Structures are given as structure tokens and as C-alpha cells.
Length: 382
Image 1 (cartoon, rainbow, N blue to C red):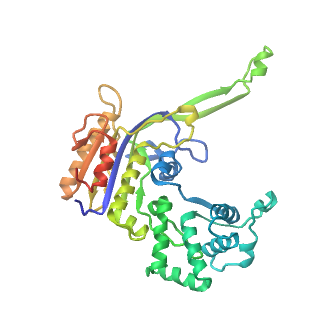
Image 2: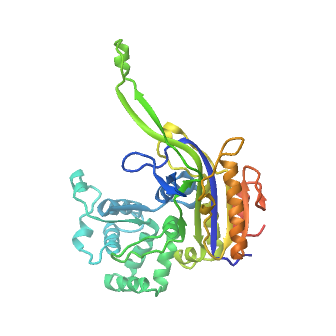
Image 3: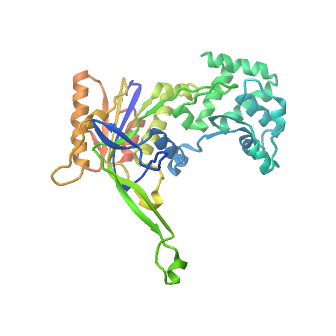
């Protein structure tokens, strides 16, 4: 069994022509690395795609709700918790969570029958992730202790590092929204507890230089064609490309245990195993109706270590195609050589395992992604 605190995840995934992540000018996101342009998929895009994927819901449950629309949020939580708590209590709790100085007026003004005009005027705060399981637990706490000042004091002490039993139970309720425990939460208002992220996710970049292509497309107006005329109803261009992407993430297992209310290591490892699967399989949805680049990872390595270690520098010198064409095989070789040299040079005492659809020089090689997940759950043992 491993006592290492960090699970490092390295993924190589070859995407067919696509435009998975765009900037404000509707162009592919990119980055200069090693002096050349790489196509990039931001960590925010990857995390959101993972959080909203069907696989996440099947494996980890419902994700958090990220919003700054307090009134709409209160209505939703009131409906979800209607069987257990009165509407005014839920409204009071949401108000207590969100505000430094809760207002009774705000807790009363949110009703299910609000009009569209009310929506336009609704209260907005900084965008933050909310969990219905967390709100449920705080409703129980407030119901038993109606003095809001005493409740607030408990959480203020918790923010200072003194986690009482009540606040620890609230933290444990984040198992109902694991993405908060994984990605963290920054907040300064009300009793909402800040959460240090347990997962660091890198921006995915191509292992090689990329020159983007432009798709010149048209939308044909059927009625114009039926009239015997020529010309399109719409003309535009879309940038796209293909390439081998390197994805990297590191899971701080101790932090994940803390974020889940001092959970045991086995629980953290189970969540980490699910996250490894999601990192290897989930693809952002941008332009997928046009390109259908639903590609799964070709190579996944998981390693337990004492520090987070990225393998991105394996590709600082951009990969060149091998004789048979393609970037995947030389990318795998470059990564294998680099990660072994880092381990040797720094004397890293890591345990690792690999799942790969192709031959690899790294071992032990497992037969399936499911086996790699089980290896993670077993704390690096087979």
C-alpha cells in the first residue's frame, strides 16, 4: 500500500479535426510552448466538460450549481427540499450562506410564483458553486439552532481552521457535490466555506506544432434553390485542426480527504479513480455537432508520488512525425523517455501503472482502463 499523497495522471489523446475550445474571437485557443504554436484546451473547459458529463453523473452523482443568481437558486433549492424544510427556512439559509449581513427582506422575496420581471431584478452575487446537500445540512443546523449569529460564529471559526463537529458534517456533505471537493471554492461572503482545490488540472496542449485550417462553409437556402436561383443564405469560416494532446492532472489525496470532512483514504482513492476515467474519456462539446471528435485516450499513466510532477516538458521540443506518419507514437516515446529521466535524476520513489491502446515501454501495462481504476483504488497495488 502506498503512503504517497499525490496521484499524478498523464493522458495522451489524439483528436481528429475539431475545434474543442474557442476564444472571444471564435478562434481556437492556443499557446506558445517551445517557441511554436500549440492548440490548447483550457483547464476550465476540461473541468466543466467533466462536471457536466453523463459519466460524471453516473459515477459521482449530481454536480454543483454554479451561479450568481440568488433568487433563482433559492427557488430551485426550495423545490428540491420541500419535503423536508419550509420554503422560508431554505430562503433564510441561502441568504445566511451568501451574505455577510443577511437581510430578512431578501429571504422573504423569493417565491415560486415570481414573474419574468422579477427574474430580471433578482439578486446577484459573485459566481460560486452551490451544493443542495450542503444546503440541506445547514438547514438541519439552523433548524436546531435558530440564532443566526451563533451559527455564523461556528462557520467563522471553521474558516480560521477550527472545524467543530457541525462544520465538519457540513464539509462531509460535499460528497453530494464532489466537484467542489475536487476543484475547490473561493468565497469571502456569508458562512459559505472556502475550499482549497484538491485537483490541479493543466491546460491541455498539442505535443507538436499546429498550423490551423479554415473551414469555409455555407448554409444553402432551400427556397432560393427551389426558385432556380444560386447563392447561399449564409457564408462563414471556422478555424479547426487535429493533433495529439497531452492532458495532465494531479490529485492531492490528503486535501481531498479534508475537503470531504476528514474522509478515509479509501473514499478519496475511489473518487480519484473515477476522476482518472473522466480525464481519459470526456471531451468538450464545442463544435462537436460539426466535427464529432469523440476520441478516447490512447495512453493513460497513473502514478503515486510525494510531489506533483508534470510531463509537459517531454514536448518542449515539438514532436515531429515518425516515418509512418502521425504524432502519437513519437509522443509516447518522448514522454516515456522524459518521465524515466526525471524519476532517475530526482530519485523519485513513485509507483505507477499504465493503460495504453498501443505498445509502450512503460509498465506495468494493464489490460483495460477499468484495471487501471482498480489499481488506483488499491493504492498502487495489484
